[in-house]
Length: 459
Image (cartoon, rainbow, N blue to C red; front, top):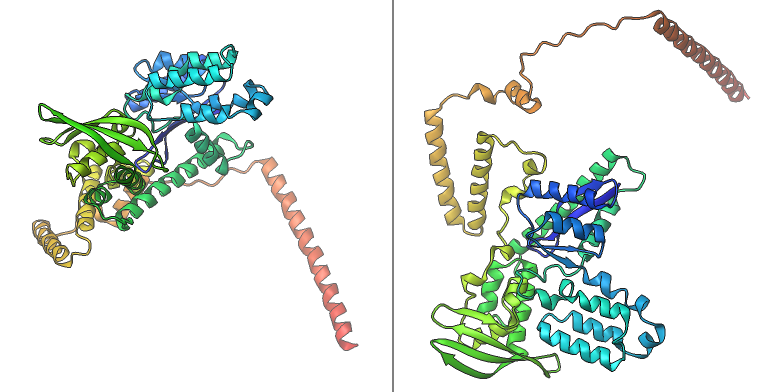
């Protein structure tokens, strides 16, 4: 059977599995059935779906996810360059490098891409090349610059994350596994994924990141983002300080417009961007569309913030997507992993424990505050025990076991002896004879060994 995982990106930019399915064949009908089940489970369509160039998948996605944007995997396309272009041309020119630099550029506009593509193709006399003409015709389905206005469009550009998930599942399974064995291995793989996510959550909340410059924006970012996202935001802050500078500025109706020179590592200007900044509500927008593409501000915006002495990242540019506390603690609770009780009492008890844990975590390294919280809890306990002085019957050992096994403790179990048939009696007698014979044979062997040992000892 074909294994189809649905993979996304969590707040640590790690792979997270939203679901998986097993289908018999790779037909349009099978894929449509699988996508229908996914949609029924999650109750919403994804904003963007990334697949390879499989025709069956493409038609199924368009039929079921009619509100989603379907995008092709870049890696599956660019890896075909050595196969589709002759060896001499590929070896004697920098065609492959040039195409990679062009299609992977996240900052250029569609018009710039089309101009540079035409110059590259004309320079190498490849205007009549069938495959290059074919992939250029569908450029809006796989080149990142055509998705720059779509939110979170750059979180996944290739299906390499799906390939990574496949390798994760292959570690624990084998082609010889039965279905039950495969499901157990699948559960083990998901447990590993949850464990990695939990470890990263703990690392983010218990460690301090390195901040060489100790800039106010940098310190603020370290308190709100996860470790992975903070490191990327930190790079943007530093690059906005070292590799970007303001060339011109103007102001119209209270909105400042800055032209930002974007330089490379050799401090050579490679592009120019326009940043609009409103000092009254700290609204900022950049022509590179960085915030839309990845969910955090770009280096050009941080360059303008530094010039205008903005020391905190505005709340409007802090989506919950990258926050360190985006997931509630109950997500990693073992009861949720193994089919938690969803009755009203169980939900209330879990919420109580979660609130208490959050309060205790917030007051770490503050003994006075923790002691004050402990006093309040003791007061609540005394009040509860005063109102309910005796232990309820439901807390007895028998009642708790009964709840765990989901059976009343008053059930009477009657065990009757099995009815022996003639065939069963004959078989039992034969087995008994074999046992007796084996025992007698063993006894004779022991006696011979004992006699031989006595002779050796006397000698």
